[in-house]
Image (cartoon, rainbow, N blue to C red; front, side, top):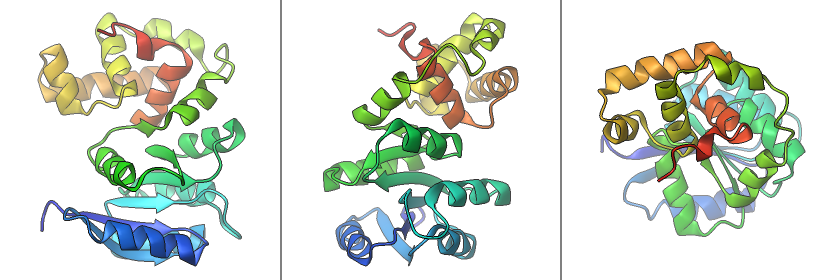
Length: 217
């Protein structure tokens, strides 16, 4: 059971929670450990249950998903948050990802694809559906610290490009013929130089400034 992914569902609609639970409970490697109907309750349940992955809606009465993401970050909760929502507008996507979401998918996602998304974010990947990535690319790429990219070494830019493509440290190490320890050092240096909090923000930065397309085979 050590490799089972423990999932918490946070959504204000009971029918959505029930539907997600029904599907996920037939997955051999996924276990739904709890539910919550708003962001505040979701944070409480996340602290109590310590899930691996949280499925989080963005728009909920009271405390919404962005507020919950911020609170989870403040508490140092290690759960990876996959936003599952009906809202893919830029003004909704960007705050959620900046707040620390590891992925963002639309509620009409195919059930099997959702299971795959849960596995991907649990493995450390950043996962964005095409329409979500499009919203990010539509954002003005001239601001937000574009000049800081000049301080990155060529190797750091290669690592950053692979982070933006959702690669884990192990996959980056394999692709660049490096040790995982060296990759971790590069990631730390990238976050420090770009003044970013985590690899999700680094992936967003790379997409916005075109680094995600560099050195693509």
